[in-house]
Amino acid sequence: MSDTALASFPYQTIREVREMLDAGAVTSEDITTRYLDRMSALEPEIAAFTTVSGDRALQSARDFDTRHAAGEAPKSTLDGVPMSLKDVLITKDLRTTCGSRQLEAFVPPFDGTVPARLLSAGAVLLGKTNCDEFAMGSSTENSAWGPSRNPWDTARVPGGSSGGSAAAVAAGMGVFSLGTDTGGSVRQPASLCGVTGLKPTYGRVSRFGLVAFASSLDQIGPFTMDAYDAALVLEAIAGIDPLDSTSQPVAVPSYTDVLKQSGGSLEGVRVGIPAEFWGEGLQPEVSETVRAAIHQLRRLGAELREVTLPHTPYALAAYYIIAPAEASSNLARYDGMKYGYRAPGNLNSIDSMLATRDFAFGPEVKRRIMLGTYALSAGYYDAYYKKAQQVRTLIARDYTQAFEEVDVLVGPTCPSVAFALGSKVDDPLEMYLNDVYTVPANLAGIPGVSIPCGFASGLPIGLQILGKHFDEAGILKVAHAYQTATDWHKQHPAL
Image (tube, rainbow, N blue to C red; front, top):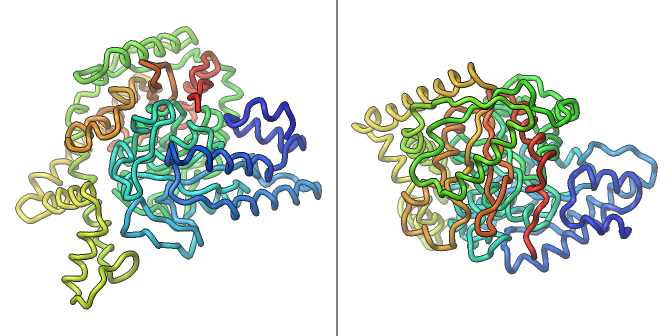
């Protein structure tokens, strides 16, 4: 690797790595080796990974180098670029645990659609990242393999449930990572770790091969250094998939062309500021920093408008009925009979299932299964699950009406900066409140992105930008314009 290439390592964008690889300034094997070495050095402190696929990554990197030396054009912009995947995305011949003892030894026989698309594009898989068990959590403290840590302060959480992916990017352990967002699990850790995190529209990216938590809410999205890189990754993974009946036949535009054409200007863009995003529990420093970021959007030409989303106060309650209800159904498959962990001993089928689930599921997963089962039970279905779905419809309607007046909505991603490890594990309700600004987008199925916009007490703060269905280009345009005018996304922790 040349001195010039070393200058930006390990915080290189996809474009920078692409330019170096194409120019021959670095080999994919060299840069992959350097990332693996950095992972080895930092992992005891950060714990971002559950499985490191070093040999596999180096073989993929050498494959790119061989093709490049032979004069072949790269398969894509991602060809030869090191990345990681959240440990809920199915990968052939590579352990997928979902952060659970239930799947500790599970090695899938096939790739999910998103991993397959990235690998076909030539991306180099460094490993699988840590997460809350079955993606249920806001701090990555629910993983059976222990918590990940925030690179900005290792005594604090990286967020969740995709905390390992966010921490990996923030710590410079790979160029980008993939996570999943069911109630904010890409945007919230992106905010707490000071990286860019994109949740696409529900149906924009295939969920085939994503181990399900809540099937009507789950969506896969990237963690990147900036919005332009997020656009590059989204171009690679978006699009209809015949293996996923919920993926939508909506054309995938060239997001990067949109960003290039915008020139960093927001002239003519109507930006809505929801009154409900500034309520009780929002840290004053977060509020001030996010409002300063919004005024920066005005300086870039955006028109600011106050809007209202009147049913937002009910979103968290509705979410924590719908998501556990779907989880209780999805996790019924882990019975010790088909695959995954099975309790030892000469037990009948009922006792075996009880012993298996009692040992292999952690307390948060058990809590949500019980909540969901209760909400779906006879006599309570109408009072809880049906009512929550009706509230969901009202929330989606709020967003539809708001987007008749504005192009995007902006506000805080999280009500606070990263909190201390262990400070909220004994208070589920306090933990759930971390999702207060993110869950409405999942209920409505709209896209959202969190980008760094400042710091409080040395910890990152995220600006959330929400858009209309399938208008990822619109929110990425706003994010890119902001990042062109600021450098918050270029600040990294001292590790």
